[in-house]
Amino acid sequence: MLELNMYRKEQTVLLHCIMINMQQGRIIKIISNQYTIQNEKEEIIAKPRGKMRQQQTPVVGDFVEYEKIEDSYRIHKVLPRTNRLLRPAIANVDQALIVTSLKDPDYSCHLLNRLIFLVGLAGVKPVICVTKLDLLEDPEEILADLEKYKKAGYDVVFSNPGSDDRELQEILNGKVSVLCGQSGAGKSSLLNRLNPDFELQTQAISKALGRGKHTTRYCQLHPVCDGLVADTPGFSSLDFTRLDTSHLDACILDFKPYIHTCRFKDCKHLNEPDCSIKEAVNKGEINASIYEDYKNIMEERGKKL
Image (cartoon, rainbow, N blue to C red; front, side, top):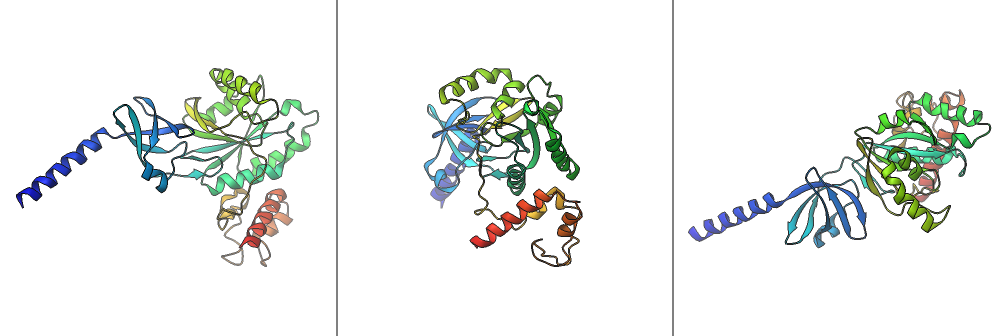
């Protein structure tokens, strides 16, 4: 019995020592199997333990527990997440800036809608950031369309070369944000204006890759406007077939005033009678393109089931 008690004490002391050596930090960059972790005291590069990679793969934005073993660092645990985006792979973000180009590439309300849906399903607040307004000769029609998003309750900000970006800086202040949008929409250029220290890195990558290709090859958190901003590889199409879209309607601000007033509690707003959302669309109270894309996604999803 004495030997058993001594063994238990030794195990308790050992566990206490391990806990003392454990540190916590946020992953700010991942390249290959190297994870850059940052906290108030240090910035280090670590690798996950073998068993951990089989359980839960860390992503940028994750808070993790790690320890130093001789001359290297090992990640032991991913702490609970508040949210997680699948593409880009990032966790614990406050908001997603959907960078929307008005020209080169041309404005697409359908791509914008799908990005709004995507970040909404992940529990992340969408913010619409409009770029390249200065390249349009006749922007009235597009501006009128963007006004519909403002009316629904979405934050819409504009950023162009030469602007002070004061409104955007206020939105980013103290927040963890992710930039997402179509390739060439101006995400990296936007970061350059907000943080000039980032410019040389982006220019070097752009020259190596060539115009029209992705200027961002991996996800990384950058210190911008007293917050953290992730620039992510661009994309032009989104696949919803692998996502749970059963609560998509609750993620759309346009629907919120009407969502609980339909005749049926489980109304999907497709073919059901007395649907308040369909009635609001017909009256022009809901952005028709938002509803059109919602309907297309739900029907696509239904065909896959």
